[in-house]
Length: 55
Length: 285
Image 1 (cartoon, rainbow over the protein chains, first blue to last red):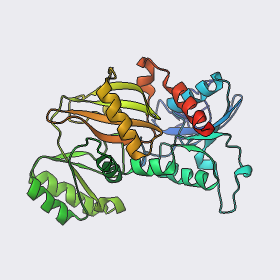
Image 2: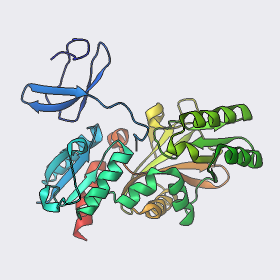
Image 3: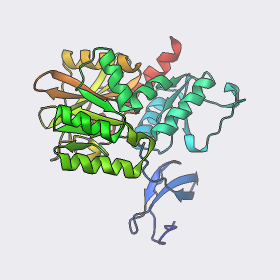
Image 4: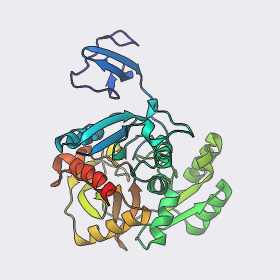
């Protein structure tokens, strides 16, 4: 599938799961896998790092 | 067969390791995205399928904390408990818990306005380390070496003016080797430890490029860490220690949603396995 931001080709591993983040190798945008049924994958814009993120 | 639910908001290696381990141990395992879960004041435990216990693993502290409050409202057992997340998520509260329970910790000064913080600095002198009370990965941690840096930092706080910017947490700069020790505790057990060697600056966060190296768990490390864990309420925690030249081991942080990706590769014990077993055993008591 292609990057929703720059249309580059996105490599989504077969074992990727819902909730995982994929990054576009071209533009660097981060996307979260929101749905995955077989080869059909839906992406949404990943959240940006929050002030309260971490351990 | 027991059922365990792992709550996340960003699926990292740690959550995948926990899931894999729980499945390998034969437990029914569900992964739940906190971002798409809803509660209301009439919610009942039976409306959901949380299983025997929930492992709360959100990367966002506030999301995880409030999610945990909802789970406890429904009487769902959750690791870590709300009180533990609350104690660990705020550095000021955490320091108070440690000191109150006689856990060795660096001397820390608290003030509630930029003016009071400046007065504090004048009395104590430089250097001191300014840390945000909420936050992780060493972000916003600044060594205040002189008045100019302090003035700039306090001015910045006034500009950003977030609710936590009015809380000034100033800690002594501990004289130590250029490393700290990260210890993972599960209940009253120390599971694994590593040195985190600074990659140049005074910070030793792995997120900032510090080099991890396996650390032997001594009796002293074990004793201090178990005491630190108990001081914040226990559970699955990451205890950070410094080797103070003056005072020996001091605890400067206890982390609620501990990251263990790097340590898991070299640790003698199976970290995710210990965590899953502890979570399920905690419901059987």
